[in-house]
Length: 130
Image (cartoon, rainbow, N blue to C red; front, side):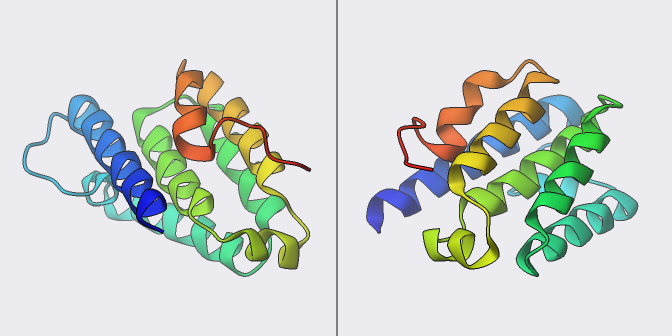
């Protein structure tokens, strides 16, 4: 549990650093709050869709947002994938999805922004079973 908490803190800190660089903001704890209200609402809607079990649909929506390659959509996606990567294994099984699929989806998302190296941070080293 301690290791997972540490990893989640690292993800949040790195995401906040990226947001600070992109938006030029100071003293912000969460990248989520750097977004305008409309973008926060998009992120919230996608996270709620994921939590309700529509993971594939939410992932598809995030990846469509990334096609426009804006810094706001990057932050929406990072917030979404941060929350998705924090879900328990049972959640994925219950919803008919897998951590392996989530990892692959994040790789595709991150590639659009040149951030593929962040995949291991968010989803581990990829040695999980399907």
